[in-house]
Image (cartoon, rainbow, N blue to C red; front, side, top):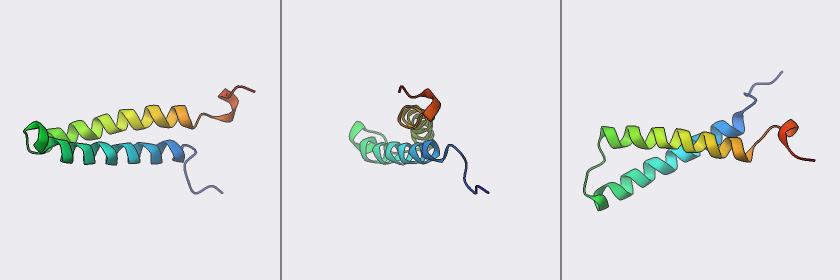
Length: 68
């Protein structure tokens, strides 16, 4: 019996992308001239989700989609 989801690699990639976007928002916010506020955190999370899903799906395709 499996205790983990089938797409766990994509989920982990998404979490890493969200963390990277959050770190970038925290570091680049003061450089650009605004404090990291709620809006910038929400935008960083949304961008991280989109990038994580895209990268995760490209990196970890199911074996039936791969070329032989």
